[in-house]
Length: 290
Image (cartoon, rainbow, N blue to C red; front, side, top):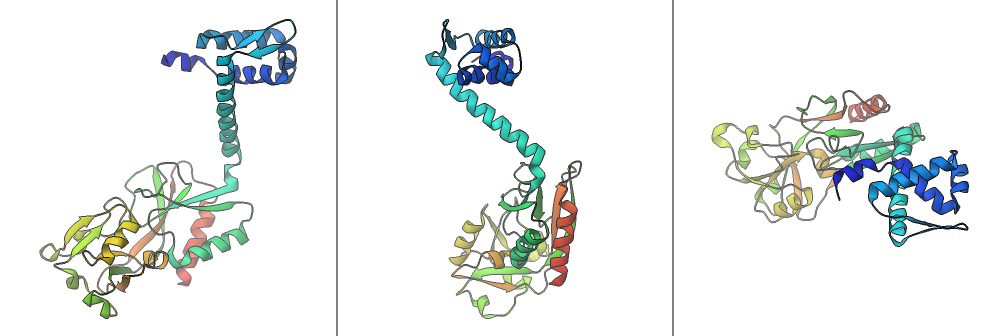
């Protein structure tokens, strides 16, 4: 289809077509739309001209869709329903709050966050959304706020630290290091480190240049855990991962000499969700409580 045809078809024309079919006559459609019968006729004519097809059969007694008209009306209903949903979401979108995260939401604080939010803000429905992107779904429009564990370089976003999490080493349950209560970075020299460069919190730069481990890559927490359980690789992650993803065959041990990971709440700089400040305060409180 010529792109110019799509540009010349508007919602007004689609609503007019659906109204005629639903009401049965041009006169009744005009009354339903609050316009004149002549306006309905002109609008339908412009739609048929734009599409280059006849959509309705008109007699002195009735108006019925052509075969093509039936297909166009069905599609028009879906388009109009989507538009109505979009408008409702834009006007009442603040009745829900979507918080994105990449691997683990808030670890052991996740359930408390959900329950406390529901109790304090019953008018705003909370949804946690997993999105494996650098912004945890914020840039993609999948969420209104996001929990990230590394700084966002994108100047479109603002963020604030809500708490700190320990770094843990994930390893196979039969790994010799699993017998220890904790490990050091030097213990992992010579191992293969499994990382997610897109959303992960650990890179080889955590080690001095001369002791950096070899690196393999993954892009999904389930794959990360599956590979680690085989003993082929180890991983270093925020403690929230251990809380959210216990896995048979995998154990987590604190890394004593690794700096903690800052947990940040991020939002659109020029269009923050009205609940951003309340979420920031609640998350900061939860992490402060420990």
